[in-house]
View 1: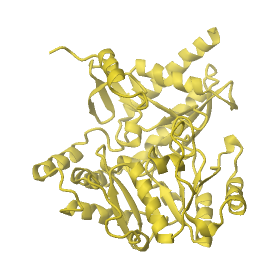
View 2: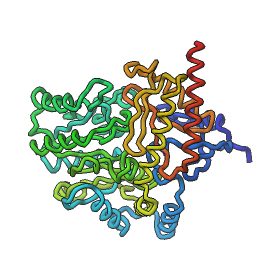
View 3: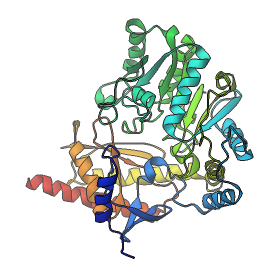
View 4: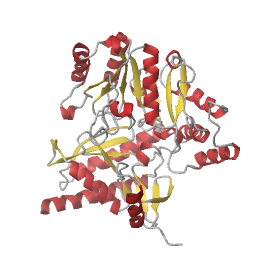
Length: 435
């Protein structure tokens, strides 16, 4: 049999798959284990992307794979709305206990993060009888129509796809680099109420406690507490999107735990099921009961394979103490970045920020935070891939490098990856100077 090559597969991909499904690297995976991926040509890569925050427990964790194999021996699908199964109930019970707050909870399972967001908005509108929704600039909530409407970034997510669902309003997310304070953001909400929509018509406000695609911008506990108070004052439901931040990524099970607030609903996905498609909306029982029977669900929603995987994920997080590991891993990456920042040859390292292992660094020109370097971020992603490292960029200015390796990654592989980044930045700096 002829060996597959990345070049041949890329040509076939371009012929068979629309370009709207963008691919960051022309590297085709053949196998993966923990924090390593091998392509079809046998080249090994350290994974600092984690499938975009999906593999907190690592690729092919033995506990998770065993749970899925055991479920496969029983059945792969029945549709929960036709003949339900115990794993869905057990997982719902566990999430109801894990999410912040003492109010009784209920959980709905779906397949993707965007589905979770869509259904959270449906439930909010059903419960309140209101239609308006407030979201934040720089936020990302999916590529479905409502997801795009809520997302606070036009390029590349919204271009050419409008019009979007109405009654969605955006306010600035606090971002000191962009000159937006928490006070500015809160004032923008009040200005919105004065100019565009009365609070009595707003069903929900949705926010990421740490923006993902927006650049790992962190909402402080004080800001989230202020939003909770504002929503309570006006009878607005607070939806916290923990799709990228959940399941030990930030050093706690959920980033919301740092703020000490109780959301009305939380949207969950990505690392919930260790790589198997599964998402959830977990919320206060009184709210979750608002939708009439048949109004929620989906053919594949709450897949038995996903539920089995997620139950194993929760066991792994607890037994391997991944919240603690997240803090150690985050500190290790931040320490490496701080050392790189001291290198006189690198004037491109700007602000470094993190919450646990959710780490980001701004790439800039000549140590000037006002001068974002998106072209350098894009070039770095391509350059490190040549040396066997998978890395992601993001940010409202396109200049942020984000770190999303499995929490189970060995320290030696972290150091190897950081060394690759350091060397690549030096090479790119020399190319820039020569130009």
